Image 1 (tube, one colour):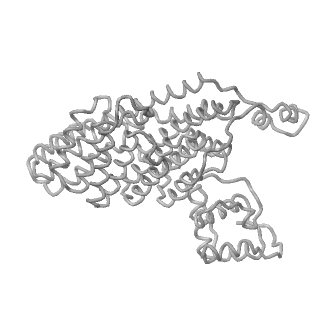
Image 2 (image 1 turned 45 degrees about the vertical axis):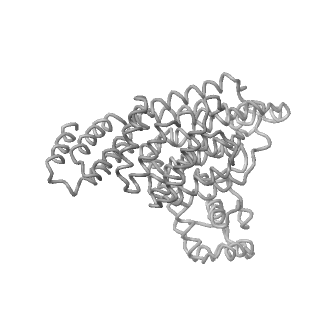
Image 3 (image 1 turned 180 degrees about the vertical axis):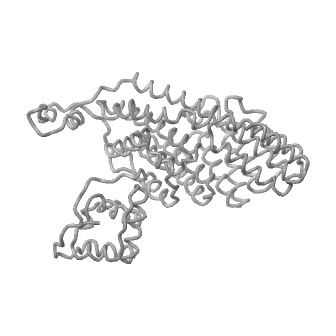
Length: 480
């Protein structure tokens, strides 16, 4: 890395923060290199590099922003390059930042959409980072809704922008600084309708079916609206719709096993929900993050996210929403093998669902949480706790109640039932159910669906010589 000549002024700000963070010079360099990898940068800093920074040399390019982010994560408070005594530069967005302002939130989210809508295959290979959950969830919990999100035309500012050919400001910058399209209620209704369409496609055919189209829609339709002109009320509704679509883009990314990318979408959806002043939806995003953590085996993080969601909304939400939050916590406890805690959370979820009434004012995203969904949650928890008889009972009930439109959820539940039957020694039934699920998985673009089936097949391995298992393998082989 080439750096500017030394300024011969020791950087005491950086030295103080290194001491506060408890970093060694080598440890700081290693963390900067690791963070660089998250951005696709191959950095080669070492302890000598840090020594030069402490002596007053200024790293070039994006490195000051990366160093600031390392300290932000370590110390739990937002720090800039200037706070470290380093020259400012344009921020580098990894997607895990919880933006300080609505404007910055739009910049980060739209940058993510643009990268994802192109041919950036490396985005789908970014690893999930459990440590990246801490700062966003904490900032959401202690944060307040933004005081102002509206964007109005500023004639004076527009007049200061030079005309093309009269100044050095590129055309794109002129457009960005001037007033954009006026956002209407019809625009927001369109965003909501598109969300319902993509949700239906995702549930029936898998996240990979139309994910890319959703991301392009965010880039080409949602971003211009967010950069447009709108008042406070319309702005809150716009941010809420954008949060919903961004969470869905994360959900579909999660379904195709692009877990690091999904994590970034969820963090940005959480921040957009903050700008919308929609606390319950923020809790729903945290629950989504908790479910991803469960799927990846990070039970402790899953429990913490579910609890932050509960704490963040308090006792105000309708019973149906509370049931959803408690069920998410139960799944985390079950992955950890915590029988009593999982059972207690399931009981709370069941009690809340029982308290729900048809006239309750329930947000659209919670309306699908019903008896079939709760039975499915019970089934998954009992499976993870190796309580196979209870798992089978609840999975069967869920399949009886769940509508055919929820094809992927039914597939997951069928695998849970197959696993429970296997655990009960009912090999023929288990293999029959597993074969049905395998056929359905091949008709979807869902890596999760395939992984559910593969998990079942791994559990079959001790019985590989049994006739039922050989028949199962023959049936599955014939599908390909």
